[in-house]
Length: 250
Image (cartoon, rainbow, N blue to C red; front, side, top):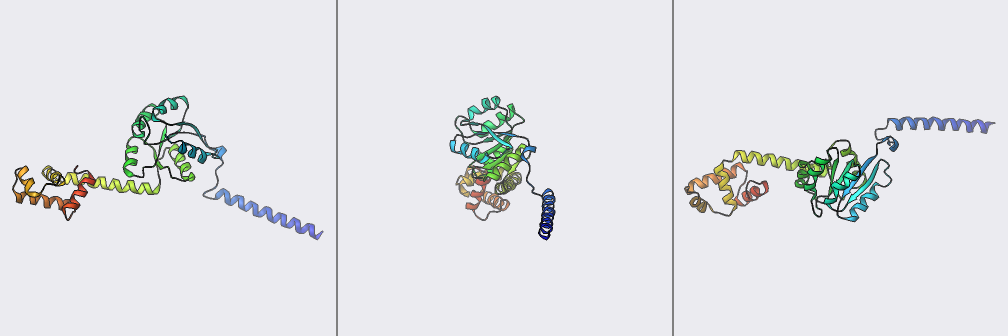
């Protein structure tokens, strides 16, 4: 009898502990979402490397709310393929045969404005990311991303938000700052200063510039000093490098 009561007591205690676990799980910030309650996200991929397509397929296996429904190995097959199967998210490579991803992106969105485009690339460059966003892409992801990041990126763009991983987001932020600085520099440099800057980048010396644009040597030197001050450069080599990197000269 005592053993029976003790067992019943332990059983009651166990039920109480389980009830606390259930309550805490319901209140937990990162509780597991029941896939049955999520809408199915239909995904297609455009990439000319079969290994990438197979890799994405393997990553999405077991993910009940995301399904890879189509794949394209060249850009010219994408529009026709999207017409054949309704798609929510397109994973788009940049470099592909026949037509590149950056050329294809605006054409896709013109025909399928509700489609979300997630760029999937090896180009770890803010320049590429900015270019694709300007062309209408909704996310930018490196092919080396982990499975969890890929799934998160697909979910993010599907829900109408822009996706960038932290590292790439910082690169894009730095590039945006540089572009703003370039815009400021262009507006702060006079047309004459921009002309002289280009000649300096071309390797011309101050006397050569003076002769070419019919100014005195002293005037050219004064312009050069003003340009270096405005661009915060201490020597010609640094000035040329900054002018080329920022697009102030070619």
